[in-house]
Image 1 (cartoon, helix red, strand yellow):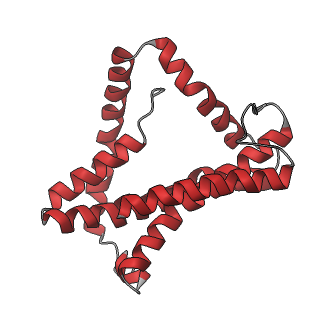
Image 2 (spheres, rainbow, N blue to C red):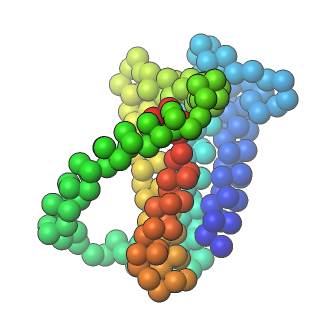
Length: 196
């Protein structure tokens, strides 16, 4: 059910993002034959609007919706009422340091398994959207980009993958290591990128 809620939110908010971007900019994003000109400021504005709404709905709204369907207490479902214990900080730092070599290994494996032409075709539009989302000429643009590209996806993905999927996988198997593995695997599959 959690994945169904997430998929529904992706579809609804992805479409809603395109519709709002069309309404605000007057463009026809998402219609047949429409090509985004990533150098055009109006098209960039439309992409920013669409990314904002898709990021808000794709995970954040999905996680909150699922939590509300399961229980009335949002804070209790995600366990926001507890405190982080300092004894976990060294483990977190060690895992962070270990993750870099693992990431480089995955990048190397991607390059071995897939042709360069395929990698370039998959990443061309993604790279353009990334460039739009990291370019900023004013502080409000910069703050908006940080909000849309970093804060909303980070909070939404953590709530969904760790707060919802991990819990659902654990409750289904009654084995915490299976729950962690399953949620981590889904997280990795979702973030499967060919550009390292």
